[in-house]
Image (cartoon, one colour):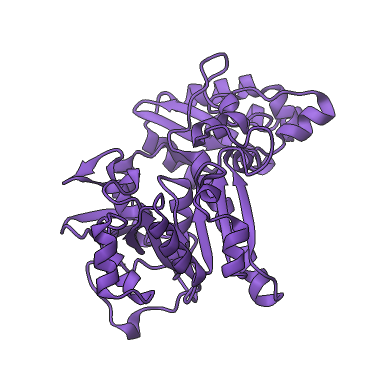
Length: 408
């Protein structure tokens, strides 16, 4: 899809979340990523931002003419309304908007909304069907609830940081704010589940409590069962997949290749490719447990084969043998890859300032109601007057709010 062209109504596919109204009060990553996802599948997302400054993400990382290019992705399909929630008039307007909403998203520190008179109890009094997503560092309850928390801390507490990096070296981040994104995805699941319950089971609205560290912890695989059963504490293993062999990164003359040869029949084919049928035919290497016991020997054999060949030579040989393998992609590799383009994972957006950007496509892909980019990321306060007018405010009332600096 090329969002620089405006398709007619007849060509716009139906959206799964048409008619769902979302008020997004979140900032930066976790809350807004959830709003982005819901917006891509048709929800109307009204983003409330502080006058003057807006969401700090507008100024994060690389800036093009005053606005982050990340913002252009994170805030597509959203409407921007400036509102000073520290003022009573701002809180009253927020209540008015929330009263007509299906979903509220916020990722402030616990107690912030309560301090503004926007507690779940108050909001459910005026809108019993409201689904309220609250993302925070440690959750809305528990001894740590009031501590400040960011995604990086959630990754550490959730057990992920201990496993990243090389054995015996400093723990490293995975390269993106994965803790925030995992929390957003869990929040999205919660929102959709609660909306389904409300619609199909006649349930009321409810509060979804997502803690950053719990979202990370939820994807930590067998970490705790292994500790519970065996007292085993999983440690960092670099690029290897612990307990599975062979699955690692191997050097080539011009880079690295990831090889996953851990299926029994795959392993035999892999050993034939590298000229080591003796390993492929060894009885004790016919299953994963035996291969794990000799993983260093297997890795050494693979490295001896790969390090004299280019990445492409390795990939070609393994593709012919039907062995899963792949190179380590950079941004340039992704931008030039035909498979990404064939699956619409690189789309073209034109920003409201007239710049053309390639941006990530939409995941997941629905056959009947696919996600879409219906509008590009707004400038700060672009939609304030329109949204407030839709909420019933007159031009005079809107002008008075602007004079009082409640809106921008």
